[in-house]
Image (cartoon, rainbow, N blue to C red; front, side):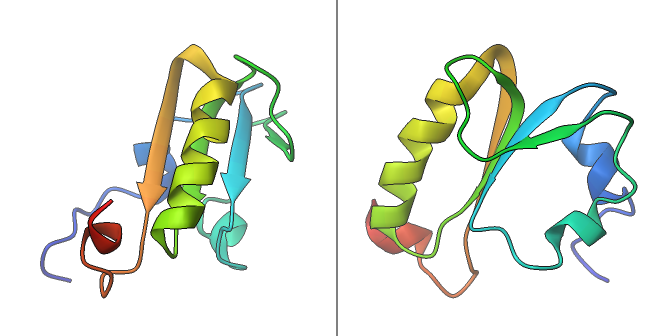
Length: 96
């Protein structure tokens, strides 16, 4: 497929054994896309401050983005990684 690397999504995410992750508004198939997860990876529903190594927010509009960005950011460990995804048809999340 043009424009895509051949690297599997799970490898891009850089998840490691024992990591905690936070997902918001993820597609139903998302966990299948990144399976099998490394051992003991935990999906947190409500991340505590500095508690997750990876957060992925799927924003369908700017209000969702703004609310969930802050929650995800605050939950990230100091060396954590935050991914934000939105549908291609939305022009830069309606110019946040």
